[in-house]
Image (cartoon, rainbow, N blue to C red; front, side, top):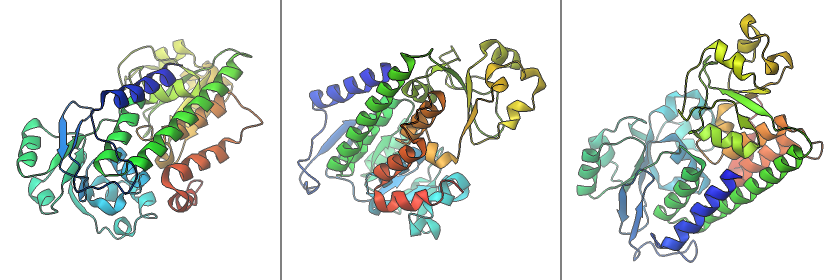
Length: 345
């Protein structure tokens, strides 16, 4: 219930404080509206009108731009989009500029080449990590900077709304927010129904690339996904990505284990873990491919739907169909259906 209450309160507060102008529709004039917002890292962002040329150096924010149907505004992206297969192998199917590596890459998730970026004449740069001095320099050159974090479900909701406003896509942004709110309520109701009949499941999450002893703490986006799915996180610490030892996992003894893009054999082959309930009962599940289950985007809904289905099987719910519906709603039918061709490969 925490997630439902927290983001509903967030949306109400954002709309009541009037911290940004709102458009009446997608034909809202970008010529005479000054936009001022505070990003999730506390920085003031000001545009004289909706952004028309955007450099985006943060993967989750690139996803937001495609979900907002605003990719025509993209003039630069982060380097990782081209050399990370979990990004390139999917974006190449929905944007020919990425397939042909035509979009400029003036930086990465962790750095920016100011000269290369400014050559693209952006009116907005979206990033995760830029120093105050760099932001000040960019602002002095007439470029607004929005810093994104995507560290919680509340952040996802605010950043979707913020970026929609900055790009003049208010109506589309509100459609996505409303959809996320409705889907969250559906998942919560489904979880409550199952938990009224049986004990709540608890889960252990492990990150990708063989890091089976690197998990998600309570102060993390993946914890929000577990809560949204209606399961308890066995990790009690608030640390985002704590590392543990085998003895700790044995002591936690989770009902289920959720992996991200790795083989369950990494657990099954560890003889010292044989007594763990999830391993004994073969309750190890995999969020794969990673692109469709990125918890730092609105695809957190796919993560929650999958975990909910594994934890509380329901013959009336086809989880695969539900995830397909989430993808087509988030990206639109054309792009969504193109992406779904590669989901089970």
